[in-house]
Image 1 (cartoon, helix red, strand yellow):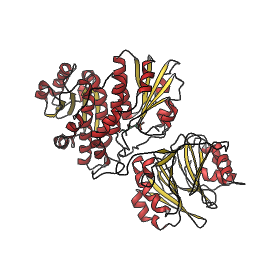
Image 2 (tube, helix red, strand yellow):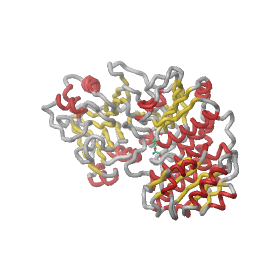
Image 3 (cartoon, rainbow, N blue to C red):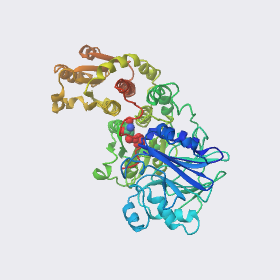
Image 4 (spheres, rainbow, N blue to C red):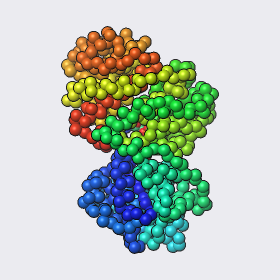
Length: 569
Ligand code: AGP
């Protein structure tokens, strides 16, 4: 949510900022702005709208200067408006800043600065004002003094008209430095800088940094230098772009033919040992990652562990780890605020499963398993979900059955899935049913479906149908049954018949002849080791959601009201 980009070098800053902001679009935003520093003067242009629209209408490209900062805002404090868009000036126009996060004590701090005229309703505008208020010596001293006053979360980049430098700080909101030759970048995430460099320094909690064209310096809140080693990222730009697919989501679905095997090869040794040595395992995650967490809890419980998956935002209210509890945090972004809050709890150990190298969650945990899925731009998690499943299998099974060409086979069903999508695209409701270890996949299929098609959908362990939901099944209600042949099929078949008897249109993902007989549409699942069925089922459900979304004229990459990285609680 919200995106930051900063540049200091020899190139025209506005061009680099626009490009960077475009690659941050997936994070979700409602307004855009940039500030550039040219001959000792800071100029800001900003407005509501998409990056291209705002950049064209306000002629960002005409802004001169080789130093600048840019921002995509996703409203939290204050309405969506030009005034509330970032960057913000301080009291004068000598300091400008962009901010991600939430300043919790902003009302009190504003109160203390009665002689300042605030132009917006945001908490963020306070930051350049505070810096200016403290500016009686060096900028860095004023910056540090201001940061000390802030309660809440922030990634901040500030520019001072009097200096050719960028000032950065992070607390509970991501910010990464990109190292170039004679130029430096900073951004909320790595893909925004990939075109220019592969060398990055992710800032850690409490880090404060100064960027010049030639160097970066990092300090703590006492102004003491801290050393952070750069990391080198192998992602190509092509990986981070669409590669000819109409949407990132479809590209990312197809990438699973490579990414699943990459994730299956992840290094899980340390985490596996930690799991072996603990009886109680609390898994915390949100959304799609929570569904992978449910799968982990299910498989570990089967092995006799006391394993539970919790929705991270509720964890602090319903559970408390003790000194013998192992916590597992699952998060593709590694920056989800609800998870960061949940894993603050004291426990015996913490494992992170994430796709983001150097992310906050990775740094907090004792053992980190990287998903190796490459950058995921679509808001809807696809390849990171199957990456999580692959890692869950590695953690739960002695030896994971070899998937062979299972993923390719499932992807090859896209044409028939598109035809089924045509039937579904005009519906208003859909139900996803499964039993046993396929239930988390039904939840995930339903989440993906509602997230990008805006059709109401629900998922149930099929046995629950007759305890309430069956009353909603009427003539033509779509019921999507996840029914590959396994120990649950006989009972699931009974549930399918219950819906059929009430007029449901049954779409089954199955390889069972009896289920096929009851179904209006079938997506054939190859016969494989039953432990791989969750992986096989996840892919057609992603394709189904994708095609229904496109048929309904929705951009699946940017569903309304949602953001890729949810960095506020
Ligand atoms: C998935 O399609 C969603 N966009 C969302 O549920 C997501 O999985 C959730 O916000 C958790 O994100 P994380 O994995 O980055 O922590």
